[in-house]
Length: 263
Length: 166
Image (cartoon, rainbow over all chains, first blue to last red; front, side, top):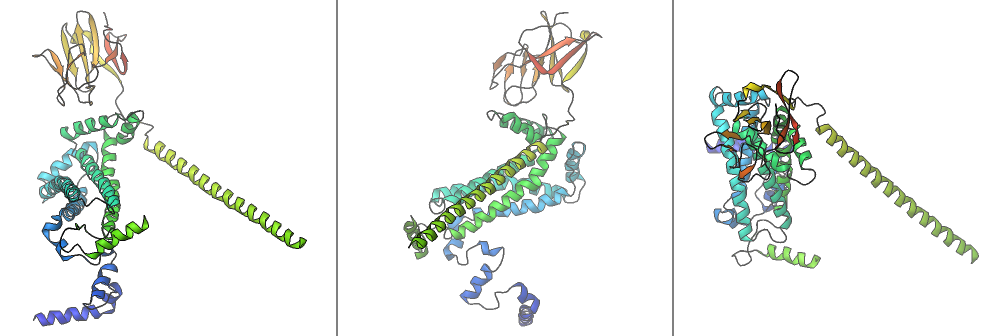
């Protein structure tokens, strides 16, 4: 029977439709494998070759990948939660209660969204500590560290804007306190608070603005920075390997040599 | 020979004017881009600043004077103000903590105003007693309406200890 399935896939991969989508062709050569990565719009952000040791748990503890994983969980559960949630003063709180007590699996999705949000903040910090203490932020990877700092800020802003949406006492006073902190900015502080809230009080305008920030503007910003972040891993010579480590391949040496030449 | 010189000269002149033209158009292009960017920013700023707000009026009618007996501190939760009646007269305080904007509460057993968020404490006259609050609670403009009711304008602060004597 496995033979039949194999021949079925074999046939499928030879069809015109399949070959029009995956143009790297059939084969197991290094070139084919490289093309499969390089010719895919999503995968081409990543290196075509990775040191085998770097795929192990010990190399990165998978912290960056796990952060991305929580982000994907948050996008999926967030979109589902949007289908029952109205960002309006009379509806917001009761919609969240409905999600918990009336909607099938609503409690599960809301809790998954909430715990993933906590996990994402934790994992982002853990990822940054790991990168910092390994020294992987150094040249030529400084720019990717800066992109990472922006991603951390976007993550924290996503957490903060999501905080208001349940529209309970905790949310209301947290946003009151938070926006008052922003009004401590010299000269333009009060204006920033006014623009953020769309008024002088945490009210209907503030709820709608935080909703749009949380569901559209900040996630799109995160996706753009994420794309640059992943692409830069490849451009900066793959995952960081210390020169003293076994198998610190010649590639690392080359790129540092090249860099010295260009300086 | 003279003819050659002329050609070189004309060539030079043309080259110079061409560079000027290119510079001119570069500057014109960058300048108009700058103007367009400034215009876009102004457009967004104006669009994001609401012109009409559906917010409660800053002027509050706090009702008849006899609602506030001598020695009482009364919090109106909806308008976030205290109506205080002491021997010196009536006055009203903002109940919004000067630290980060939480609503404070009157604690009769402690005889002080306390903020639940970060522990600031104020006297019944708004003076800071403890905590992170940088300023005392502001005194708000208070007057009596023609109907003998206590009126407060939350948008106007007055110097401390300006009591309303009736």
